[in-house]
Length: 251
DNA sequence: GCGACAG
DNA sequence: ATCTTGTCGC
Image (tube, rainbow, N blue to C red; front, side):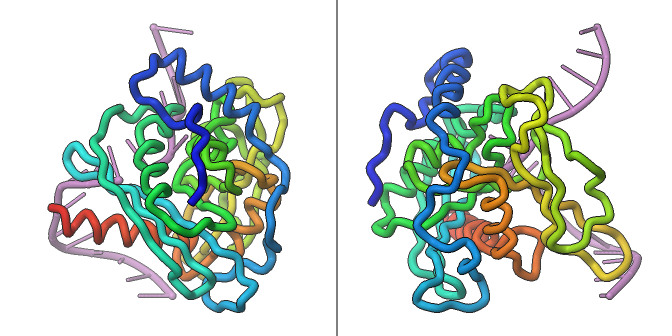
């Protein structure tokens, strides 16, 4: 499907300094404004029309010394196609360098896909990253496709107000702080409450940030449109289930 | 030195 | 991420 920008294919053999240097370059290539060929409000998960955008969910599972990367492409409630790869683990988990651990595997999975999605939803940060080059930015730029990062925990940055007691659908901007390359106060994403119980104990929000070719507002609007019955957006859940299924058949 | 830290 | 039983609450 998509031709890869080889220069940005994650290379686990690089030195840490080289990785950080490449990340700064990727951040300069990244477009944090809308450059998409579909209507964000047309995104759905439970229904579908011929105009419903094609959304890709990406997730990983781990098995001993191997990484399973799974991609599920869905148009609304229809699974269009899926793919996966199993690759050796070549790099440890280091906060800020996640794309060098999982990125190569993910790109290989995309190379086996025959269909190009309208937008990709990743399980990890996008612009909410020290050098504005989280997993969703790195892979989005490498593939030059619209990309969004959805993380279950905040890597860096600061919510402008409390993220406790948010109702489903509510969001709070996440702004850059001193340890980030983005100018102080830049909105780099949002905390989005995807689900909430009527009463009792609360559910934590997810952290949405632009990967490539989408603004923070649009990224959050799209993920909001992907809300289902659970905390994680539907594309991520589909990919998670596929990765688990593949993993189970391997072991 | 101290604290923070996606998956 | 992954290893894992029960348990609380809708």
